[in-house]
Image (tube, rainbow, N blue to C red):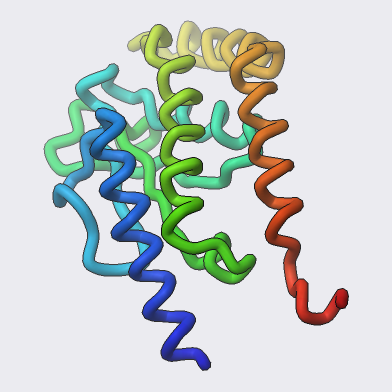
Length: 163
């Protein structure tokens, strides 16, 4: 059973990676061979990983900011995000849902593309706080959150224990 689960995790990761690339998201290795992928967002804006992580979190999608090769920004404000598939696979999602998830991620990334990380420490802190306030009121991010909730509802945690 675990072997099938592990294979599905990788299949989902490959499907999600393909869909993200089809949606215009640059991946560091042009795909994945394992359970996660690293999106390089430095072409959108150096240091945008923190904005992507915050916005996706507000949308109900958990990822991590992450440095990318030759990152033009500091490790504290990286230009990439790391995305994995074990949690969604545990819920029972498969390849068809990866297209939906990739589209939702892209919608949120498009919302953060206008934000540029200031270079000064004080300006950066103020800017990030203002961003957090703005993104929590963003209509698209709210719509994505509702879609994420609806998708998660179709795939409850431990469904076999509930029924």
